[in-house]
Image (cartoon, rainbow, N blue to C red; front, side, top):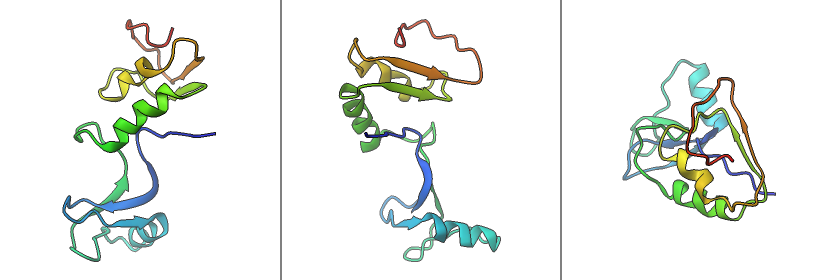
Length: 117
């Protein structure tokens, strides 16, 4: 089974400087935050953050891989999304028509694109 997370996760962190992009594990981030220190990269001293896909971030290889994963999935489960924000709102369009789809969200969604039908 393959689980593809589309909004990142807190399992690791990365330097925010695009020329550096050094990666750090969750323990490293947690230690600094518990000491009330902002996690700075040990190589270039730029800010580090969890590897979460913010809505304003530009397209990434992660998004391209998401469409490949969707094309090959046996079951699509979407958690906590109203399917209105790009780029992830288009992921269900890549899923084959005969694949079951499940949307779990804590609010009603107004999605008239029929991508979950």
